[in-house]
Each structure stands twice: as structure tokens, then as C-alpha cells.
Length: 205
Image (cartoon, rainbow, N blue to C red; front, side, top):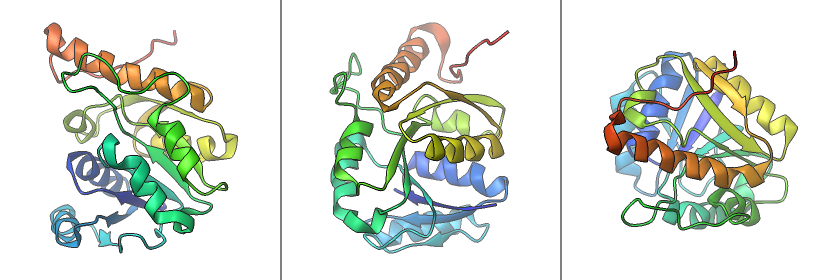
């Protein structure tokens, strides 16, 4: 299996880390708060390690699991430490009341991250359409993703499949904004009768 670095130590970092460890991957947690990252590593167990914030992550795939407001600045602060890495953006840039997005077509968080990252890093949008408490259950789920690099998408798809997801390619990175809206759609369905245990999927019959 592979080493996955997760920048962040919140609920989604915990959910992804838990599922990845269960499927045999090695997890490195990185946070601006080392004590919080260590506490999460201790809770996850499974040999999860803690990396140094700002240093080069151990994993070739780096999951950016911070609030959308901090995602671009976080990537920019790493600079060349992220050269050659695959950056998986899981953020959902909802406005304050969850009625819309703060991004626009052509200016998704993923595209902003791509502009801030080293030129040879590749950004893939993924896992933003699954609630963390649903993801952690390790049930089969559809996972939509988008990105411009065919090689990076193939590696992310292989990772998603290894975690028990069915990876579904939504297209180039310009589709990241559509996936951000899909995240908002998920919340809308949950709030209006669907409940927060649901997940989005695609019927390909």
C-alpha cells in the first residue's frame, strides 16, 4: 500500500485517516498544531505518524483537509515542499448560511490551490461530496473526482478504489466548481428530509 499525508487534524482528517488505515495504508498527519496532530495520531493508532508543518510530506498523495478559507494559504506556505505531489482538495466553500458558494466558475478552491502550488504539483478535487461520519463507516460509496492530470487522477482513482469507493471521473479541474455545488446539494438534501446519513451516487445501469 502507500503512504498518504493529510494536512489537517479535524473531523475529515480523522475520517479519511481511519478508513485509510483500515485498508492498509500508512498515514502521516500534519498540522500547524503539532499537539493536535499527535493526539489524532494516538487516537487513530495503526502506526499513524506526525509530520512537521511546512516540511515536505512523506506521501506522494497529500490530502488538503483544512477549512476552505485556509486551503490556498496553507498550500502556498508549503511552497516547493509540495513539488511533484498530488494534492487532493476536499474542501467545500459554502457561504455563511449554507445557501450558496463563495467561489465561481473558473475560480474553484481547487483551481486557486493549483495556482498557488508548484507547477509540477497536480490538484485533484475529491471526497467533498461525502459526509465524514458516513465516510468513516467503510461502506461502499461513490466518490466523484476531477483534475487536469490523467496520471494524477489515475493514482487518486486507485487510492479511492483501494478504500472501498467506486471512483467516478467528472472531468478536468474546471469541474471542481460543479463538485463544490454537489457538496452543497448533499447538504440541501440532508436538511430537507434526506437526513445526514445519505450519500450521493450515480446509477450507471
